[in-house]
Amino acid sequence: MARLIFITGGVVSSLGKGLASAALGALLQARGYKVRLRKLDPYLNVDPGTMSPFQHGEVYVTDDGAETDLDLGHYERFTGVSARKSDNVTSGRIYSQVIEKERKGGYLGRTVQVIPHVTDMIKEFVLADTDGLDFLLVEIGGTVGDIEGLPFFEAIRQLHNDLGRGQTAFIHLTLIPFIEAAGELKTKPTQHSVKELRAIGIQPDILLCRTSHPIPEDDRRKIGLFCNLAAERVIPAMDLDTIYRVPIAYHQVGLDTQILKVFGIDNAPEPDLSRWEDVVHKVKNPEGEVRIAVVGKYIQVKDSYKSLSEALAHGGLANNVKVHLDWIDSEVFERDDAAAFLENVHGILVPGGFGERGTEGKIGAVKFARERQVPFFGICYGLHMAVIEAARNLAGLEGAGTTEIGNPKHPVIGLMTEWVKGNQVESRDADGDMGGTMRLGAYEASLTPGSRVAEVYGATTISERHRHRYEVNTGYAKDLAKHGMDVSGWSPDGRLPEIMEIPSHPWFIGVQFHPELKSRPLEPHPLFTSFIAAAVRKSRLV
Image (spheres, rainbow, N blue to C red):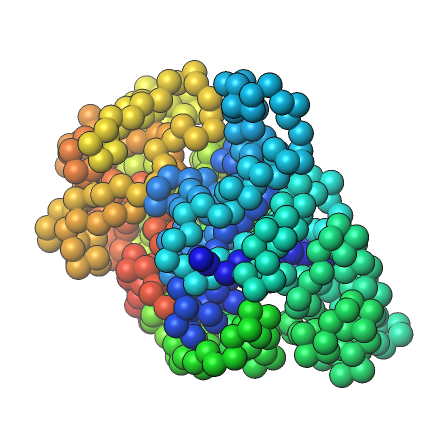
């Protein structure tokens, strides 16, 4: 049976539990263990699919079509293990399942309560689908003391009692703030956080302490004394210059060694961290640099494009260059000339999004990239904007647009109401629920032999993850092709355009899917590798 490691947080949010969990997973993996990571989110939404990117950041999509928390992206990027629907659950989904079971008489007339019915459902979720694993790492969202998180803390407390200390371990991520006026670190917030955790029956086995300054040995002993831990299990987690150094740094301070000792494992092989060391070397010693403009509508919250920014960095690693990102709100192009913002960039990327706001600005950015021969990458909604721009300015289709934001004269982008997944036809009612009703998850695409994308992938059949409701209208494909924009990737049944490119342009590709979701620092995605390579070539021309 898999050993369970529960990662909780205290003092403040945004300390990096997801990153810490992912890094520990990578360390255990580097020692030869088989791992999987899972996230318990206490909020009442069924999933983050309908949540605003300004509040929640990006929605991460798995191969099997789950809309999940962005931390699952960290898990995949650090371990390479593809997440599944069974790896993320919310209070909303748990309560929905409990209520559905009650309505069907599943509780045989009993009074349904948080304990044991909700906690049992959480425990069932945690333990499901774990065959063949050595370690399952389970992150609990939020911080200790959050009201909505209490059932999850109670469930993991019960699991500890059910399975025993030899099968479970608790890591508590906390903060040791440095007070500038006093010139010293303060341990009291951590003491109170652990006190709160112990009050609900959980004794942490390891404290992972985020800090901007080294923690003196006396302070580690003091924290251990007040929190009922040996000093060596009070582990500093210093701020680092790159997130890809985290597995190396955590090994150096003994995190993986101590967690194995909690489970009584003293003879584990040393981790092979050479690949991570190579990544860090490339990050710190680039051979050049490029500047990429990301023209989006959620740029105020960078986590809205977390996987995207990481994938661009991976493209830089593959080309041994540093990638500087200019985050540009697309609305500025509706007031000002795009040239003022894009004149000195080496590549332009228009990412996904929803709704009308900022669309004309995105179209302006596409036009600039096409006319100025700047490498262009359009992702999902970015593809739609590229098609609209080409329809208007190349094919002369005045009034071309998308039915997502009106009733255009030429609907070059339209609502997709039916599609094929595997051997099954799936459909969506235009007036139905918003949540979970998009084309979600991994779909295959067939690439045109000899096209740029076929060359980039080195293949003519690919699989990529989708998250959208609208598609390129195939009725306009021939018109666009006559004016230089080709469909170079189709759904296997030949009904849905997946990729469009302008062969005469140095690098102009738009894709219907989200390739950023499958990029890894150890395995950069080919599209991002090729895009950054084109940007490098552009940088040498200016």
